[in-house]
Length: 331
Length: 287
Image (cartoon, rainbow over the protein chains, first blue to last red):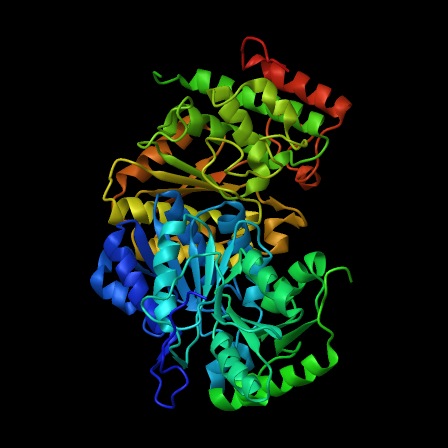
């Protein structure tokens, strides 16, 4: 394992910061190092943290208004003009409302537009189900040419944003609104397409994306107290999936659990299941939203309610392990 | 390339029409009326208005042309072949497996295409994005961005989002052409979803509006020139056209919107195009 972790990650006073804040810093940094980077926003400049870029590069910031279809299609045209456009809105609206435009003018047209979906997941909280985007991972990962990222904390979001500015591909990055514990460090690696073992174990592989990786780390500590030695893998790139890292772990542990703040149908859990069922049919438990919409509530309450805190997940995982036989080659 | 005379441009338009008929007959599917109605506009675009190098499609100093209503792409393919972007014989591969000439245009398949389109309503935004980059970021004043839209696709909300954006930003290097042929799949545009007062709509969005006969090549060229001269607003040219223009049994008939001619109909159409009251003369249709 070669992933430096924040030693204070399990402390009560661990530093917390919204993942979107890292995006804001990363975008500004990308703008400094690459003049082709431009930013387009649909009337949510501060809440999507694009204001840092806007203040630094006012001529390269374009206000689109509440028009998400225009947001991504103007960006497609700017990409044809040699720009690297980042488009931001809430994930519920982009890619929620403008999926066809993304499909045709960005993915099929193969233009390096970066769709930034902020405020994704149930942790948006009191705004309720309309604004809690849970289907974006599924919507984006089915598109050919599309890269899909869900960074786990604000430090990683900053690195991921800088990487997207240079990857030359249509891309989606999923951000969360609420303050999230910082588990990585400035020295932790980030590369598009790589998953990272953040805790080594032998009994079960816990695979998390976005905010859920931290919760799985918490779950793994709870499981350890019961004698279960879990391996935890943080998967910030949902597409292309790092099959090598995932398969190497599941080959060792024989079973897997996935966690995402999104619909398990078609989402990250589905991606892992698709991989394993074809190559290494180990038992899998998918944690996330179980084919239902969210509702209003405080972010922490909602995670608790839907069983997505570390403690709750530890219980679910314990039950799963008791029933699920470990996969052995030759099944 | 020196400027062509009006008569030469009309002859180009007729070659384009013949190639459209020939391609569609061979493809056995595709749209007839829109491409035929746009032939004069595409002749004017590819042989006068657009500053392009067919032998160097990615030439950095070129004008940009976006086709928004991708289903009319046979007229663009025919114009591009006529202009020398690729050999005319390739037109016969339209809509066939492995062809660079997809049923709806795909940028990555064919050099010279600037976008991928088909689902309606997205071309104006892409053109606006390019024009914004030229005007405000790169500050390049001598290049222009043109986009052709159908009138039926003006039903799409995305178009009016783009119209607001271009008007707000005074995108004076953006010149849009609306193919006002009054038909869409379910019937006349005014029955399906009325567009009038179309001029008033664009004007109220901050656009400079010109209305022309879309079959008068001199008018098309003149309107584009006027559009380039307006420096404080984007320009839209409402080009009144006859769907199926040039083939009498297709003209004005919306059933030809999404239908190709069969062999017999194509033969008839080509005969009509080649004689056209003796007004158009050219050497060898090549079909």
